[in-house]
Image (cartoon, helix red, strand yellow):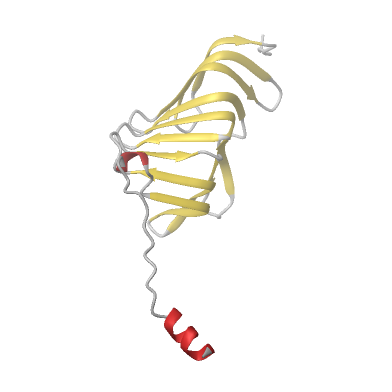
Length: 172
């Protein structure tokens, strides 16, 4: 009797269904967790990207990427040593415009050892420039410069703080 009950219960087909996605642009085509990605050039690792969440919206117009839990990017020299980095609490990348918007505790270190801190930063890969209209702090070896507004090349080695404040030592 028990055998008949077990065998008859195995014949039931259970259909699993879900609602159709009405707006495909609102759903990420990629939702990756705990991402570590190495980016190489001619077989040499140049960058390492780390993110807790990386969402890609390729169907949206314009297509974009979101890093809702932050992003960390390191640049490596030829000795495989990290010599520059960029990090933020949140990042948004517009693929068509090639424009990054970094928000929240944005920190960067350039190749000259200068450290940058701001609440918001924009990076245009097309124009090869970095800019911000918020507060910016630059920490150099012997001085700290604060200001509002910032423009720079994308390496952050040639920059202008638009409205600087702070003590800046100058040679006679």
